[in-house]
Length: 68
Image (tube, rainbow, N blue to C red; front, top):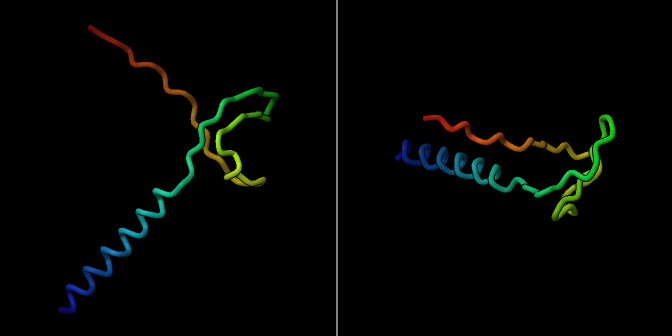
């Protein structure tokens, strides 16, 4: 009985922690200009952002190299 309670509690902690990761906001942005170390972007749903938020930006992936 005690093992079942511990297993259930661990499963709930795991489920809640993975669900929190899934709620991260993803925005679709277009780079308008680059001036030194400043970048100006136009984003859809930009109202989710606030000044001072840290944002992770990824560059477009290169195409696959096709071989024989």
